[in-house]
Length: 292
Image 1 (cartoon, rainbow, N blue to C red):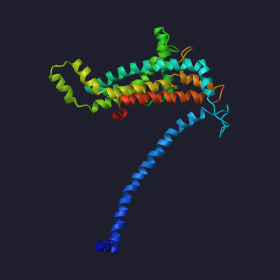
Image 2: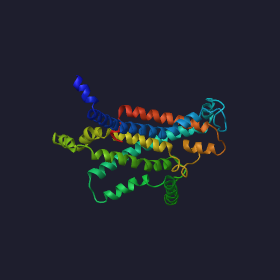
Image 3: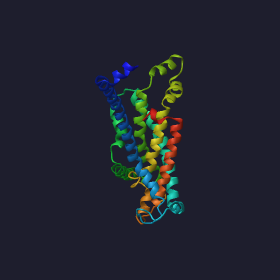
Image 4: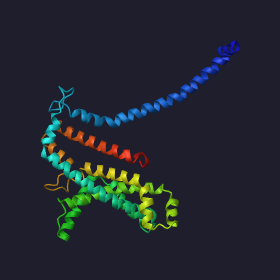
């Protein structure tokens, strides 16, 4: 024991011990720095949401910092405003229908492009993914002009109708389904489908009982993101809405023309909480990390 102590206390032992401590500290320091960086990034991302929710409880009608007090009256003010309630219901209906139709079309398109190597598949894929790179206001104006030309040729009303707005939102939701489902199809084990076919299952039975369950996380994630994109969209809907067909984002924009108080923050806070609950419930049953 004495010789061991002397060996550690000798200059060579102290040098070896110091080198080992430095190596251990060197391994811990990058891990600590990485965790700190992740925390800072999360704070940076979540800070606007936290600030909006905090702002919705300010007592002052004109934004001042620090606030003179806190109140929940702005939530009651938003509840009493009929345009917000009507816009919320209309946006909810529009987003649900757009997500259902867009996911159905997107899944069929992803399967057709990924599994059927037909001529022109790359061009069709590029066309269906185009809304992701086209600015929303540009797409809205283009669809508006297209609707005007279609009304002249077909003698039907599209601008300002629910059907015309729904069609535009479906075009907005298809690319999200295309990207997620195509990525999921690329990672599927096709031998499982081949085994089902070899055991006597038809093409429809294989799709319904084998392929579709394996694609469930991607389909649910597609439906979730399609719903959120449609529900929160402003630029595309702005030139297409008509009387009685006002979405919640447009109702918020109209309120801001004549008012500047925390009512808008209260409405936004309700949206943040509701969408957060939807994402948590979805992640509870289908892990979004499997697809994203």
